[in-house]
Length: 117
Length: 111
Image (cartoon, rainbow over all chains, first blue to last red):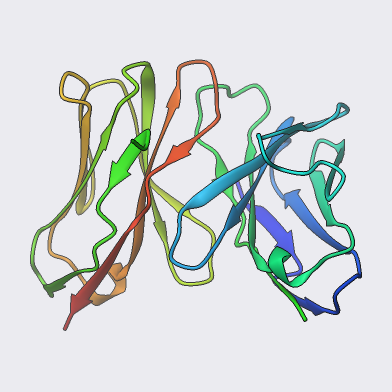
């Protein structure tokens, strides 16, 4: 149980385009989801916390106009990288918390590898 | 000083060896401690999840938390080549779910 699916798993696009990444909880409801970014051989850095039906909370230094997060349902959060540039190339990972289970761990998706040419 | 310190390795051991992975932390308010395993180009997979101090065992894995020393460990017994991955420690405050990760330790088990 507690499966989180991310789509796409890998995307390559031209500089200046916008890219949308989906994060779905497949067998549970998730009021809260998280978006992380990971550079090669580095740890996960939290970008933002996404709560269903409300605005996301961004970590310091993360541009909210650059990384748009929408959490419109209890099973889906999306991250849109707007006007992407090569420096946005990275591994983006989402995680989700089971609704109501505040003391339970986060369940992670398999990540999306974003390459901007 | 980072909030969570973890030796990035790499660590290479022969198959069957006991592996010890460790993290230290500075924030005494952390209450929840986790170990995740991450294979290349995959998301983290939860291995162990503990609350406060103590030991927890699950198969070949044992997690230890020593809050007085601000030190956590993961032991892997009878290590297998399939255990080769990056191991991330993570921790969070009670009642809050924001995770703080260690840098991750790259582990290779040699057949």
